[in-house]
Image 1 (cartoon, rainbow, N blue to C red):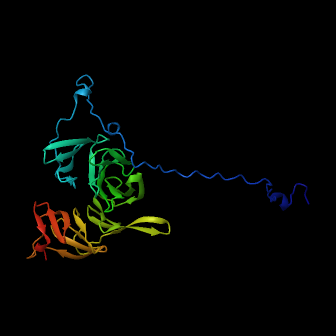
Image 2: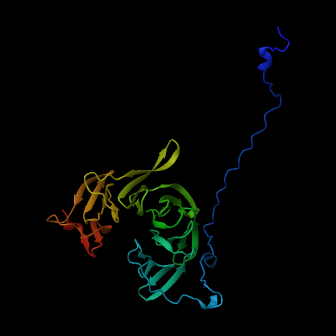
Image 3: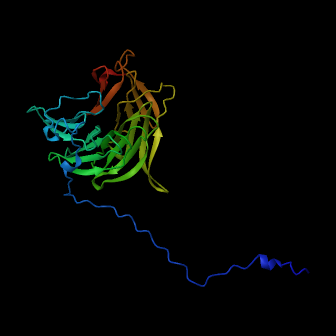
Length: 327
């Protein structure tokens, strides 16, 4: 054999096994969730945006103070909320206006971003209300009522603006949905300032999100060309928010502004042409109109309410109707 040749054993060495014990794996510390005291409040003056002038040589900042707000956006969804027998709440630009319509007085809350407010919602006990703002990763600020102290702040729920917020019937959860570009739906443990569930609601504008009044584990969203039915369900990977998109079938696809969850689990929604659509599961069971095949409304149905077993609708035609008009 040539001296320069080598045996195969020289090419395939037996690996050397270390006799030293393996290094101990360091456990990553668990993320500690902050627990806020029930008596903790934020400082309102540290939160709010302040006025500014384009040129510091013109008007001193201390000259600028809000005297009165005359604005009201009647086209904004859910922009009129009742806080008590005498007080209404609504958005006007960068302000939250609390109107005492008995004494004809107003109080104001500034937004923290300075870029406006997207949506508002009132706790079922009327002891808190949510102000969901606009801006870069805007906040949702929960105010205590009637003290108007900032109680909780929810962050990172959407990128640019909130479209809608809603408390569940028990009042311990808050649902929010964002605008373009993310359309994120989030379920919050709002007292703990923690998101419980989060997912993308849809790929187009979402107008509204609400909890089912009779089942906190079910929600509905609606918007541009769609309605979607959601359920919080335990899966093998944990708690998930599962959505089922409504299928219009032979009915024309429509934007859906108003809807209401019925006690039997069905959902009654409006349409752009003014008729009502009754949804069972994710399918349309029946389309409702007025006697004589007339539309319920001349235009879209913006609001549907249940009142002691009666269904009341409000439309873009300015009329309000009861269910006795339909067939």
